[in-house]
Picture 1 (cartoon, rainbow, N blue to C red):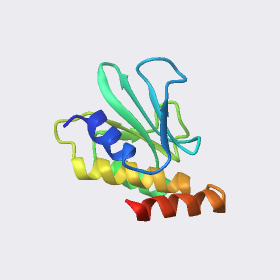
Picture 2: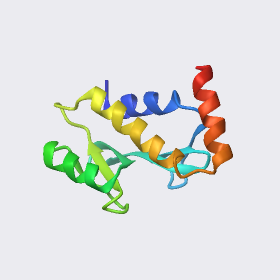
Picture 3: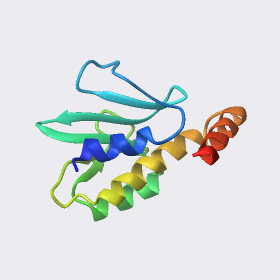
Length: 123
């Protein structure tokens, strides 16, 4: 599977996820209740995704994986960019997408978090 396929299919399984293209075709913005948690795009001919991370976690990921860099056009501490790579670990991508989603959900209003929690238990 490709980077965008894995990331998108993982995101679409999560409650209250929507996708928009405010920057035009070719850049999909994934949101949970109108808060961005992932972007998918191509950069210099390579598929890439931006994901939210805890700053320490992002630094560790960049040290370990050569295909993970600071967030392109995003806050360099709180976002990473993952590039398509032949050594890409599919389970890592799924975990990173879920982690980004949960970081954003944690900042939502209490009632919104409760709604998402209820929707997750139904699945």
